[in-house]
Image (cartoon, one colour):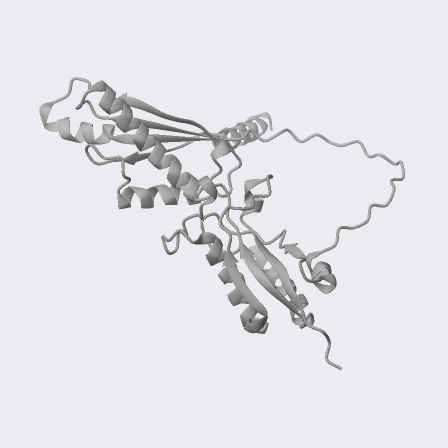
Length: 289
């Protein structure tokens, strides 16, 4: 029994330590270049997509060069390579606040190796190293149940209620409609909510509205890159996705228009919430007599 208990404890500790392990990735560059090759960018995007379900504490990006070139040149080139990787992270909705280091380290000194391996070793030194550190989960603390009666708090109105009561100029945020990082499609859990919103809009035949798409984390209020099309139009693609969904559910296209607002209006909280769609009610028709 004791051996079994020890084995279980060891297994749990192993799982916990693995879940907290830093994730690493390397991107390789051509000689004297800081543009990311297509194959390397695709590898990096796959790595980024695997970060969706990880609670990230920090990301470090370190650029390197091979031993050729002057020290000052290599230092600049390694920094440019690190900056290029940072830009890809930002363009794919990874918050800059998570990136703690973007440093060019210059050249990596070659060890004594056989001449026939020299080109291969140099190729491996033209790289950027990425280190992603997950957050350590907080220990679960049992709360003491307070039996003191609490005043009733008015329940926050749902999206359907806001649509039913909506007037011209009202902006309604689709709070629980979440998008996959870098994509225009919603998460599976969001589809049922989107369906109930469509039903509410079908009942309000008198309102006309604009669907506004947003992205998070990009620099200078730019749009993010749509990983599916490789175009920098992700906010517009998200608005179009919702527009097409509503149209399939029977909402008249004459009542709707869609627009991408890039990252002009961040909410200032969790970056995940900036990957969002809102509707702005632009017109309410008068009932026919």
